[in-house]
Image 1 (tube, helix red, strand yellow):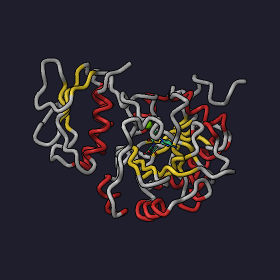
Image 2 (tube, helix red, strand yellow):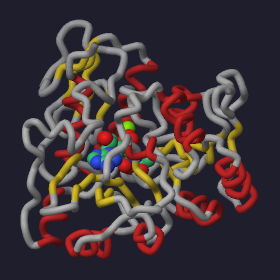
Image 3 (cartoon, helix red, strand yellow):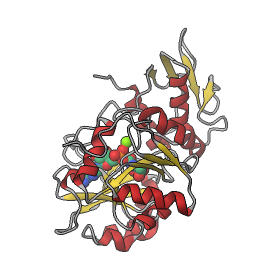
Image 4 (tube, protein in one colour):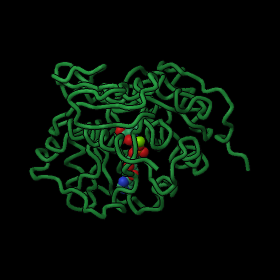
Length: 322
Ligand code: TXA
Ligand code: MG
């Protein structure tokens, strides 16, 4: 059977962030279509989390392996409580950081209505309440849970502008809500709170900040954490060119991505500001692609605070590819 999301040749409609634009976007979601929308971290590629056909469309549009589960976005804590069972630690983190760049992995409730394609069959669900007026407006106009991975072809650079989304997915999705550039620039921090909190992915809220709210450091997943964090493939966020890390100067033929004192051909942050570097990271990688850079050298970035998320993405960008 032909699904609504199969038509790879149809136009992707650019929608505005006003009430009419959000109402159109919500209508597309209700009809089982795919809508890219801004969050404070990166653009998400949304579908109704309760419609398996629609969720299947996300995996098809991204070329994403179906064993990699999706994050469900909801408008508030009450909506999240309808989907998952909260633990005391989860409440503590949600109260401190939602809405915000934090995703909580919790036991899925029976009768949540969420398609098993979203969880890839796991007994847990990743949920988050985004802190972006357009994401909030869309979630409220739609009135249900929205499954949304980052709006990029699987394994490629995450999108922080509408142009990035269209570069990767134009013609493969029904629409995009144009909310301009994302402020945080790296994806949400993911914490498994089914038991003692475990950091599954460094992200927009630094682990140190979460630990302070919890009153204890976060555990890190075991070396064989492939089940806990099924989507954390080594090679990801990959630009076209080869990536060399911790470079203080370019070798012949390389384009240098700078930070702080290492000026570079382009820079994550001239002043060495990690917040600015996170916000610029994916746009710099997209620009390197647009320049057709075949060899990319990247300056060292300190590993504290948001630097942990930046370095995680850079390591994956530099990882050997299939
Ligand atoms: O900031 C973000 O989190 C963005 C915006 C759109 O919200 N979304 C995002 O989604 O980064 P995605 O699909 O690119 O990354 C989701 C990650 C994957 O690594 C996936 O494996 C993990 O979340 N994940 C999803 N459900 C999980 C679960 N039940 N247990 C463990 N990891 C899970
Ligand atoms: Mg992603």
